[in-house]
Amino acid sequence: MKLLVIGSEGYIGKHLCQILEKHYIELYKLDWSNATHSKNYICSDIRYLKDFDLILSDFPDKFDAVIHLAAIIVTGK
Image 1 (cartoon, rainbow, N blue to C red):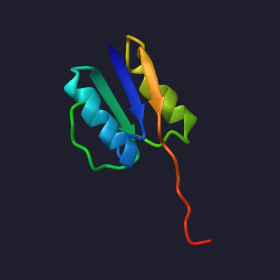
Image 2: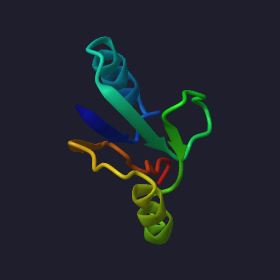
Image 3: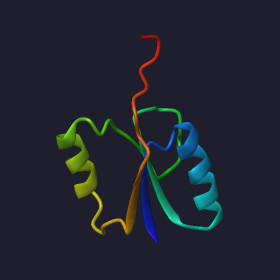
Image 4: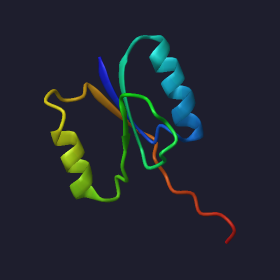
């Protein structure tokens, strides 16, 4: 199974990816944070749809599933 996790560097995303990796799922991570240096990590901001379309076009085979966990948190107001 080929899976894309958008928002992989957030609290839930990190924990989910750890679980999925234990089950040997072909996992691709996408986040705008540059923290992870795994081979299947994509650093991009999905708010820019042109960039996102280019990223997806780089994959000849489509993903079996996409999990979207990305969010922007605004605090202090």
